[in-house]
Every structure is written in structure tokens, then in C-alpha cells.
Length: 121
Length: 108
Image (cartoon, rainbow over all chains, first blue to last red; front, side, top):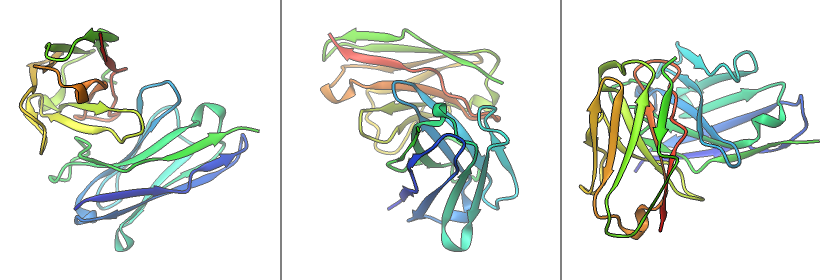
């Protein structure tokens, strides 16, 4: 059974940094592109970043470009999101999601339960 | 970027009725890479439909998707109590993999 478990969220001050992790199990992690998606309070789903199965290709939403880095360690079945220069508008629940079994980035077949990031002084 | 606009914003219906949700793209969606997700409070989003009209594993057949090019529809026939939720469309043909703003299906 596929399982995605996010961790690393918490309260951080504006301009601070945070690293989110997603532990994957139940599938061949390196075969799947992965993404981070967030949902701010009262808002809709927002795609944040994606990475190919090999880790060689990465993509970012304009809202986070230059401030976050997505990475993965296939030997440990782990996906990460390093976030810097955090702003109040980055406050959200962050989800990791797996792509398609073909290796393409979507659709987002499986989702974790999310980790809450709160940016506040 | 392919921007998705969903309508209506809110749909008020009774159990047993049918729901028709619309998703319009700012340009043609690549290779029919259009998906629908269900979002309930406190739960992770769930993939319902991919490739415009294919149901994901375990999704009941009262959920159906249709459309092409820039206009897409999610239909929920015979609404069950557990179907009242927010629904999002998403194009996944090219980056950025944007979502629509969502349609809330609420109990009338």
C-alpha cells in the first residue's frame, strides 16, 4: 500500500527557513515524479514544485521560485522541500503527491496527509 | 501558463440530485491531461478522474468526466452524502501544473 508521510512543518518567523520531508513507501519511489502542493487557510490547492523520478528535472511555481529547492534521495525514498525567505503568504498545509506510474508528473495519484507551515512573528 | 477557471463557485444541491461542474482552460489542454480531485476538510485530496474521463481506482461510477480542448465537465449523478466537498480540476500536461480555484458542492 502506497504511503506518503510529510514532516518538518511548524512555526517559523518571517524570513526564516524550513525543510519539509516526505517519506514514501509501498511503491518504487525512483520510478515516480513527485510534487509539493499547498493549501493556505481558506484558499484552494496550489501546486508548488515538482521533480522527476531521477531528480534531474525540477520545476517551481512563480510564487516560490528562487526561495525553495526541491530534492529527492531515492536510496532513502525521501522527498524534500527546502524553503527560505519565508513570508506570511507561505502559511499553508503542504502535501507531497506522487505522479503517474508512467513517470509523468501527473495526475497526482497519491497524497500524504500534509504538514502545516505557519509563518508568523 | 494554462489557467483553469471553474464554475460555479458553489453548487447547492440535495442528496440524490446530479451535479455538473465546469472547468474552462485558457488554452487547449495537452493530450487530454485533465484531472479532477475531491477535497474534504481534514483529509488529503483524492484523485477522482484523470485523462479527462478515466476514473481512478476505487472511484464509483456515479463520477464521470467529459470534455475536450478547453472545456471540461465533472458530473456526479445521484449525489451521496459523502460527495459534498470541494472539487478541483487540474491540467498536468505541462508546467506549471495549475489547479482551478475549486467548486464547492454543498447540501441544500
